[in-house]
Length: 134
Image (cartoon, rainbow, N blue to C red; front, side, top):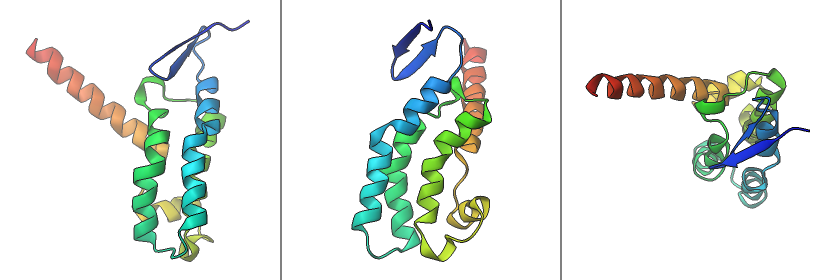
């Protein structure tokens, strides 16, 4: 039996694996529902408009689960979270046929893994700065 604690939306499991957290992020209805609403209601598929909607309505829900504090290291967990962003990039007709990485570069986005790495680097830099002052 696996024991788990939940605090501030982050689940800590006694084996310290983040698979359950990733599963929760993927199954979390807010991000998928917001993306579905965008897909059903926006007829004019301008990349600029869709990108703004994605960044303001969908990605904050994914970032909640993609913090550097529990960055997933299993490929299956990373891919599970990345599915929603992949789905978004396929919504834009002009780039739908391109590989995922190319779609991201055309939209000026990073993979969620890259976002976690960058935020972790910024966090550690800030922490070092704070520790030097004290």
